[in-house]
Length: 379
Image (cartoon, rainbow, N blue to C red):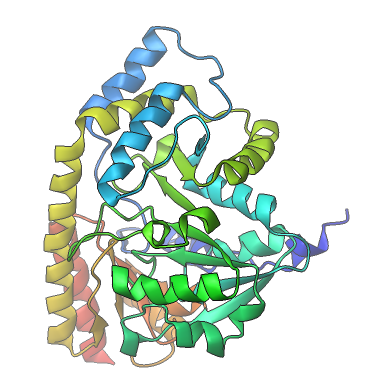
């Protein structure tokens, strides 16, 4: 059987390999998965159950239920974003689908797409699957992993057609302030780049306010913003996300979405609608829990003598491991039954780091950190 070249170009997920190793062992504590350990808020679950009991199991509009799009438009005003629910919002099967559809809608074969690194592992494969050419733009811990005009220039991003952003960032936990984003916006305007801004961790910002690049002068018309319910509302399995952008961008994305997915799952849309209407307090409580864990993990890495970047968003720590990150992660798993992800799987700049998810209960987190400390002391 012939497999398309662009599929053959993409290696298997580096994260998946570690999950498979972890599954071979019992009593493993996994700090590898980027998934909340909370359940979705009860009101959202009740809404999902109610929708099923009422027999609401048909397709919705391709763009998603209008009342949900209206609620999304109201919700994002807290980030100073203003989108028309009829023309500028598309509800998708997770933020992942929104990103995939965007790549296929905007990337022509051979287009260069600038991808800051370290970055979420699906961006580069998404570019390749769409026929584009990923352009790595390394970010530096010295700049708190914020993207700068200089980084983009040094990487040759002036020749790119699109730029992917992800702040708060997976895997580093870095955030970018409005003034820092202004540099990136200036570059995008100077070189006519379209920006795909993944802001799924916006609600999990611990220090300062989340800033969206789409709110900066000259950016709304060249930016598509992505968000979803997986992280902030602990609704990973319900698979619901959304994209917001200029009407022509959303129409193009919907043209692909309506052929590939028809519409996002109806049950999940009802759950999301209720989440937006009544679950703000649960989001705050989960964020506070993550923040406590964040400070605990940072202090423990400091005690171990492992230099750890101070994450200000998402739910990941990104310590240096002082050597080969793949070997460190594999030996830690084999010797101490703790699963973390090598930083190198997230691209340039991730080498020598580990991604440690603290979306795990404090008791289990304490045990895991004790094991990591024992492993570090024995090296």
